[in-house]
Image 1 (spheres, helix red, strand yellow):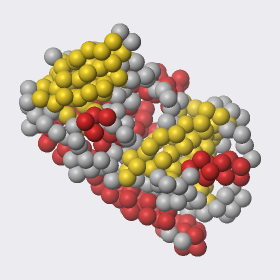
Image 2: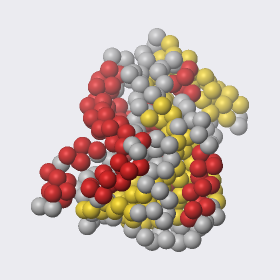
Image 3: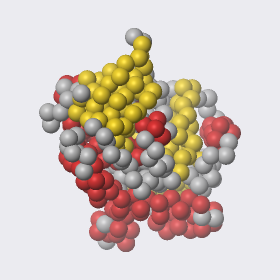
Length: 360
C-alpha cells in the first residue's frame, strides 16, 4: 500500500508528489496521457514561478518578459489604458515544459510517476483507497492510504467521492500565431461576457490569443471575432474548462483535492498554477496519510493562504461586467504605474501601490 496516490500530474499534482516524496512517503502518481499535453492553459505567469524549479531550468522554460498590460473596452483599435511597472511583472514560459520539469522533479524526489495510466474508479474505504487504473498492459488495482485528486476542473476523483463542485466553470479557448513578437505588454479586452480576451507576446515562440466566457456563450465565435480583429491566422487551438470559486469542502475521509480540481484559482484571470502549488505545499506540510483527521488541517492551511486573495479576486472580476462607459472612467482614473502583484489582489491595497496611484 502506498502512502499517497496522486491522480493528475499537472503543476499541483507534481508539486505535491515531490514534496510528499521528499518527506519520505511512498508516492505513486498517475497521468492519463503524456505530462503537459494536451495544452489547455496559458503560459503567462508571475515571476514567482522560478521559486518552484531549479535555476538551471529557466533558460529552457523562459520565453518573454512582461512589464504591463494594455486594457481595452473594445477591440484592438479601441482606446488603451496601460498599467505597468518599471521592473518586470511577469514572464511568459513554455507551459508544456513547465509541467514536464515539475514531473521530473517529483521523480527525482522518489515519486513513482506513471504516464498513460488512467484512474477509472476510486473506492474509498475505512482503511484506505483502492484505485482501478487502466493502462496499455490492462487494468490493475492500486491501494493507498490517501488519494490526492489533482485531475483538473472536471475531476473524476471529485465526482466519484461525491465532493462538492466548484461554484462555476468557464469555457476557455486559446490558440497561437507563430510570428515572433518580443513586445513587453499583454493586451486585455473586456469584450467577452463576464470575463475577458487576451493577447500575449511570447518572443520567438509567437503570440498567444485566448478568451474565456460562461457556458452557453459561443466561445468559438467570440474567439474568431478576436483573431479577425487582429487579422491573424492561429494554430494549435486548445479548449478547456476553467473552475472559479472553491466549494465549501475539498476533502472526504481519505481523499483530498488540490489545484483546479479544488477550484484553487484566481477568479479574475482563471490562472491556477501558483495557487495550486501553494495549496500543494499546504497539503504536504499538514497531511499525515495515517491520520485522516489531518485533512482538516489541510483545509485550514490552504484557505488561510488563499481565501483572502480569492475573495478579493471575485470583487475584481465584477468590474468586467460593468457598463462600458463606467469601465472607461475607472480605467482612465487608475491607469499608469502600479505597485501590484499579479497573483495577489490584496497588493492593490498595499502601500507601494497606493503611492504609485497617488503619484507620491
